[in-house]
Image 1: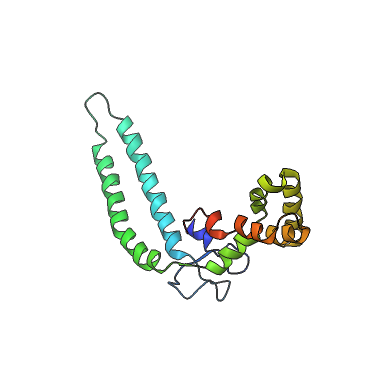
Image 2: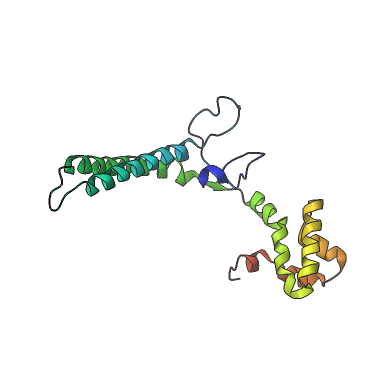
Length: 171
């Protein structure tokens, strides 16, 4: 998720910025590669592979005997070592430096045609659907178009589209 959320800066989601840990992309100057998140993926893939090996080895046991114990222990201990070594590095070099692009996230929320859903109880599904389509086609906000159409009073729209209310936050 961090790789996707940090994709950008202009064509991706770019909702979060990850701290740079290397000079940048070899093919795109100025781009910050999510190398710590990519490394975490590699660690996770290895641990999943180790777990699969352990699963097969456990299944290979017969009755109370399992001659596969060495491969079981090796893979369990290797997974523990990988996670023990990498997770603190990931926390320090990635998690602690994550920055949310609040302005971009607010823009995404403001321009999201799905917000027309909140209009449905007030103006009906069909009219809300028309507004959502128009907002998407024109690259404008649902609130802006609803205001323009005069279907609700400005103060009603302010209440309906209050970000804290939309996010179910307490005021």
